Length: 144
Figure 1 (tube, helix red, strand yellow):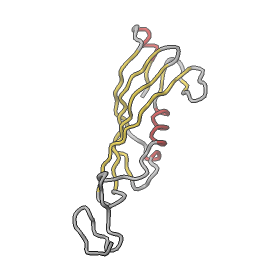
Figure 2 (figure 1 turned 90 degrees about the horizontal axis):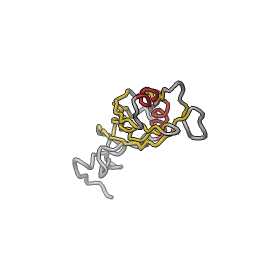
Figure 3 (figure 1 turned 90 degrees about the vertical axis):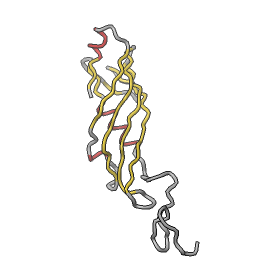
């Protein structure tokens, strides 16, 4: 997603709310057991001496539950507070010709904030280590 900050400045705007969906490239997904079905960015672009981007990335992650192996879907929210500059300092992203491309920033956030485990429910009981039954659905007679 590319934002034309020169256009915003010409319109006399100091900020702009943005919301867009985006596809997530397979090569960004760390775990082969997980799939990121969709991504959304909702936030605000602030024009000052630099360009400030604030908002939330929401990812819909699916795969097998790490405890019970049933299908699971989890929404992951990633807070975003980043700075874009034409002459970036450390921890800032570069923008050129008045165009702020959020792609690299979003990809960096996805890479560093993916869940290490996926759960069908926070209280998932998982599988019995002895007989393998799903403890969410049935009680086994194994000794604990």
